[in-house]
Image (tube, rainbow, N blue to C red; front, side, top):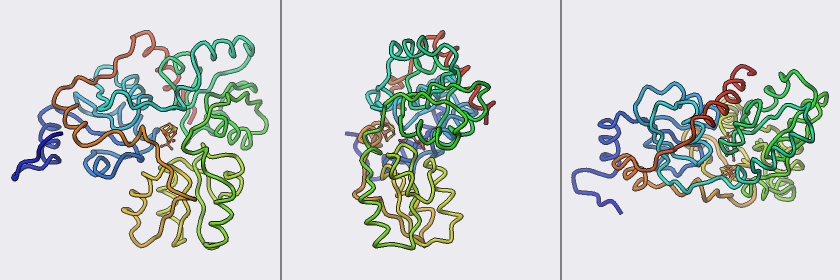
Length: 307
Ligand code: 13P
Ligand code: SF4
């Protein structure tokens, strides 16, 4: 535990250390409020990838989960990328191994492989193109072949297929434990109590929830929609961390989690103490083999070309 003195708060110490180390602090939309508030930039996976690529700094302190920090390293190999809690993984990303993907590719040699950004660097290195929840439909639409292997999220894969019926999507059966828990019965109940509310869901939610939602969007897509909409009340089907930012940016509107609030424990592991220690010691660096960085970068660069 880092002790606060009377004169300097932990937040003050982080800010001065950040300046001394020429660091930039990036936070995903699901991080705890204290991390979101101290970050230089808060965003979804796509926005954070772009920020990592373009950041003018020596060090990137990435408050998120492993696959996000790895993506930052792939796009910014010359910078030190720190993941304050090295063990913060994404269970969805761990649902497919390199061996699984090689077998699938051998079965469908004529298909292109599209990997969701929620994958390990090794999986990205085996893929033709990467996508995020913000651009999955556009990326797949622009692929020059009909057959597409989509890994690892079955719900996002289904959503892409529904939006692009002309493609043949072979989807891996992975899912996010957090989003899989949103249910149609909770959605119907919310519609009954708040018939005027807008329901916005993340594409990792089960398909029956997606079908009954008003909008299916990435976390930053949700923020943009909430700002633009005339609705006063919103039912949100994604990890509860986003509700903090939605309320902060739209104080006159009301936001509720669909059903009970769903929490991604991996996203909540990073505290201010962890961030401070990461910046002080720089001992939680993301390290990837140069060969993996080179191959995975092709999939990430193609994502940008295809959108
Ligand atoms: P976004 O890219 O929409 O921020 O989602 C990332 C994620 O992990 C969703 O569970
Ligand atoms: Fe992974 Fe789900 Fe957590 Fe997102 S919310 S980081 S997909 S476990």
